[in-house]
Length: 291
Length: 339
Ligand SMILES: Cc1cc2nc3c(=O)[nH]c(=O)nc-3n(C[C@H](O)[C@H](O)[C@H](O)COP(=O)(O)OP(=O)(O)OC[C@H]3O[C@@H](n4cnc5c(N)ncnc54)[C@H](O)[C@@H]3O)c2cc1C
Image (tube, rainbow over all chains, first blue to last red; front, side, top):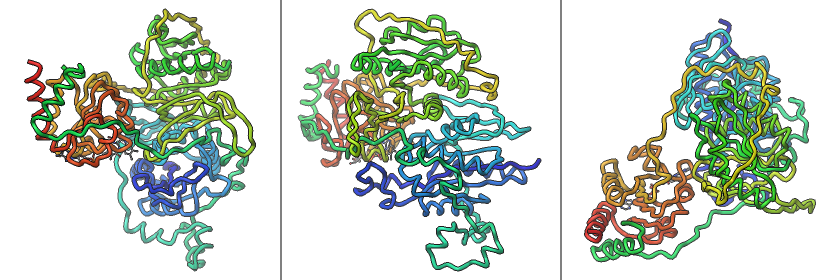
């Protein structure tokens, strides 16, 4: 068998477990610079699924595609250290402020540019938005079937994939033809850790933007080893219509952001003494709350 | 045109709870907007399904009944719903934030190039003035949801595109049977005009759906435990209290993650939303994601050894102390005073 061509969609996300005060900008978009950035957890599950297919299907290549600011190249390198072959960073000021519809438009153009491919695999959702919308929206824009919440690939045979999916209240096994879009659930196997050999091999992988920003000079090295170049594409590289991108291409608008405030109730504070507890239970019985 | 649509999910001949809840919400939105409430039902063997739906206030029910349409599959269902929405041009479309709704809604939003907000916790109607242009919009759907791990509450709108699509989790909206004898029209969807062979390329080989055994959502009294309960063994105290009071036991995510209690019983943003008559929070600190699932309980009692735990601020009664000491006393004095 010839091996498959797999594209993994991954996102660098702010670690929402560590949100500070300056996390949101006045226009309601996220101030990413103020937060630690991590590889979106379910995208790591997606990467693992892709790598498992690669393990068992010789000749398979895994390309990681991410859209984000320049520093998102970090997760491409991270994916390479774990076994991905190639990376593409989709980055342009004009993508900034995109909602899920505009994001999936941009991603779908980049996927088309990477054609031909057999599988597009994404995490179910990103922890900064929890929407789970981008995967299905990319599938629709590519005109492909989708299988969401994948947990395990049972087989890849004759152009068809058999997949176990995790539903809210159960599991389903489906068989679908390639090319196909998959989104991967957190119950899928955790991603393998870095491979020492790949970590050395890809240590100097950079995007053009990163090379311009640093004083690193590995020009000759890069010439000899083309795998060290992470492709960087902007709006014109994927032929995007600017009106469908960014804030103007996003049908959803943030009207208002409120910090979470407590709506206090009149709280009666009670000690744990026998008397206090008995009084409380009597009160609850009398008001027919219990009993 | 310009009506409110609810996509009704079907499982084994039953309309899903979340769809009925959305019909009730849709009814109040439609009343506010002075338009009709319409349900879309796509499935197989749907004869008589309207009897489950009319009591929740639908004026029109669109039914696509074809043996190929059950169980749910992305492509045929989205082909039909897209076709229906293109014809009917609804103002608002509501779907459950379930495995099905969250698979289907983005597909629709992408095809119709319209805005979609996932996991809304409130839906309201209101106006909007665009800051930059001064342009005014009347009667938009405010799609309100926690964002950013629950640290903020965002109000999202779709000023220009229709339908305004939103998904909502089960238990967030309240299911209410209409006061009057509601009865509307049934319309048959001619699905063949939207379906092609390409829509059936994915095959379902096997399916196991478990009916959830526990139902904390409809419990009148909930005794919930958090990480502060400390162990699975200590949860016994909570089961004892729930047992004598006739309630259910629930937990926080930290309690679920700690393996003290099963995920089906998790209350909160990523669990179930409950609104019991009495909620007893034992060893729960009360982070926003937890409160989002229980702050509408009628009476809240917090048992916590930390007087400054955030949960105390929304509790009607705060008992300061160790729960392993307090709960047995509650059981003792309940039994003493009801005998
Ligand atoms: C995206 C996202 C979604 C989330 N969704 C949910 C959700 O759906 N539901 C949810 O619950 N959480 C959710 N969380 C997690 C949430 O932020 C909190 O981490 C969690 O609710 C904390 O659980 P806890 O109160 O049980 O634990 P803790 O915060 O550890 O609190 C334990 C409490 O027990 C008290 N205590 C300790 N020992 C005793 C004792 N012996 N007697 C009495 N009191 C004692 C302590 O004072 C403390 O107040 C979510 C988080 C994120 C980021």
